Image (cartoon, rainbow, N blue to C red; front, side, top):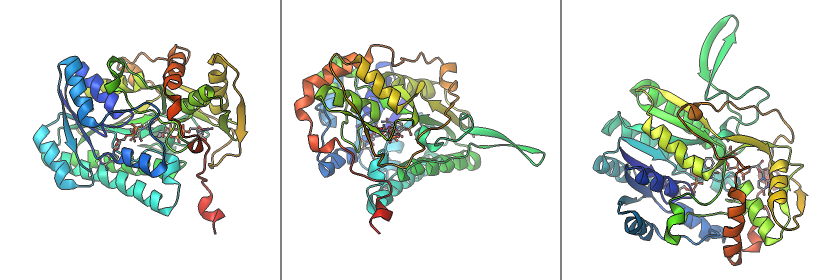
Length: 385
Ligand code: NAD
Ligand code: USQ
């Protein structure tokens, strides 16, 4: 198949492009390098050094003999986007290309507006590109488990059968997200479902949990193929941060008591889920939703697992939670769709954490210690008033 990976220079987009290319698909990547600019803005680079995109694609050609085409530009530039889709003629488009940090979206008004504008308008341009150029293209869109929030009922895969006053309907599952970033994904989901309904597009919305890990079999083939690894309090995700903090000898920063529970997924499973979704497209007119996570765990438990596995002393520190989250809650998520397509999950009990300790150990001199502690507060706007 011909697959265009939007956000193909990012943490997950790059390894996904490699995985799809490795499996024999014709792959192109598109990116505007916004993520590399946030590094400059925030003063924290990827813990593992990463090459620029052309060096990456050249290295992949040298290692595998396969080519990955590059499109450098912004999804907000509709002319550029339409040109790329017309030229590459994909049968599937995988859309990772959004601002993905919840704390970044909560820094202030400007960052919230940037996040929703970038994400919602980029996705809308893409829906129009697909509708006008080739409505048969399968959109595989990265959403997030955080769209649902933490409701006191079971979380279904995107849809909910509702009975109300004696009548029944199948409705989009109600959403209660926890940041302006997570809200942007809710808005995207609604726009995509509408486009499937009115234009009969085909789409898979992958509500992904928090990803951990840094290597896939392809990125490990050559240091030039490495993907980024974020440790800072704005872009670093919880398990990755705890591993890095353990190696640095810093306390693991559990926000609040750590009773908040999240869905998790290994980066090797992320890339495989995308392959499964691409190779098994949704039907025309179908808005298909999968919950892309393999296990759930409280933040406190994640810290304990990292501390248990680290071969040295580790301190766990409970910080005042800078976010607004339910401290303890019910969490029961249905996630059978991708398993049904053949996913064989790597669980945290596998050996991944140990290999992460080694990667971090080799690069720990690159850490800017000032960027480890959280500084963005969810109540910042009202605290400032
Ligand atoms: P990332 O920031 O590393 O990658 C996103 C890429 O998209 C970056 O390279 C960025 O430059 C690019 N991009 C952003 N806006 C763009 C635009 N307007 N035009 C072109 N390119 C643009 O993020 P990631 O961790 O790889 O996440 C990828 C996707 O997966 C995101 O949509 C995110 O919401 C979702 N997701 C990530 C996680 C996680 O734990 N990392 C979990 C669940 C869902
Ligand atoms: N947390 C800590 N200590 C830390 C960092 C985080 O206790 O040092 C806690 C947070 O309070 C939160 C949980 O860990 O309860 C997860 O935080 P995170 O920063 O790892 O993840 P989140 O902000 O939810 O965002 C990440 C990705 C985002 C994706 C989301 C999936 O950045 O792109 O959408 O995970 S999900 O969480 O399922 O919505």
